[in-house]
Length: 341
View 1 (tube, rainbow, N blue to C red):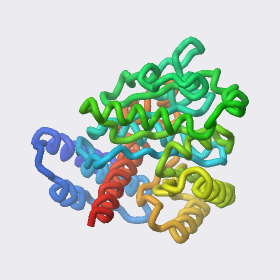
View 2: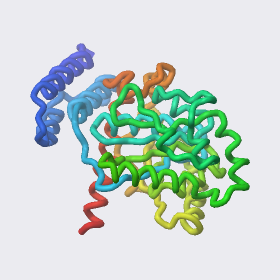
View 3: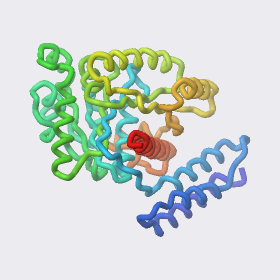
């Protein structure tokens, strides 16, 4: 392929370095777009060159860029009843990308496996104060939240194995469906009053519709749904939407699906393209333009106690999550502007 992928990578690296060296507080979005458009293209017969060119454009457009912060705290529950669709991976990487771009982000790990806590490098062994203490004992979030060691402004309320028994223990408690909502609201208000507001709260749910997930839905105003680009994911989405409607009807009228992200996208297969087309046809307003490809780097990052954003920031997976985070932030600001108008 006449060395095209290597040449494209060299061009992208050189341009990105120039942009970082000349970065100012001014909005350089148009300049970045013009430079990205100047990257040499590739035809359909050179898929590797196409992929490298696409990553190069993303790197130039997104690297080192700040994104708009919301006017008020956005609380999103990342949910899908089907397992293995990338809920936790999406939660931690979107959170890391938002924080790296200047936002203050809290991740609430509501999955007893504690995978989000692991990926963010936050201790979650049995003796650590955790979200279990908040839900069952009514402790404030302030004593539970821990900073992510790799990314400033990224916080995590970890999950421990104790959370596995919370489903049973919550059954007999008063206002069992609203315990997380009260804790999160109080924490958000305290930080706002102290002049250090949160921009985003992302709640990572277990793959089921138990009391933990119900608490997450009641605490949030937005639902963020990652969808794996396979047939079974579409069946799971239908049931999830029915359950969200039940929550809206009985517990949280403000809840709505604001964001859908296509994950594990494989451009080489017709199935991925068909699933993506179906989702975009039926949920055009909610589905992000960005897609997340299958990536070894994304899978490797948690074993190092990191997100892919810090583990390999130039990988296709990191760039895709950064692109999705920028789109998520910009959509939120646009929606707020429309509401104000």
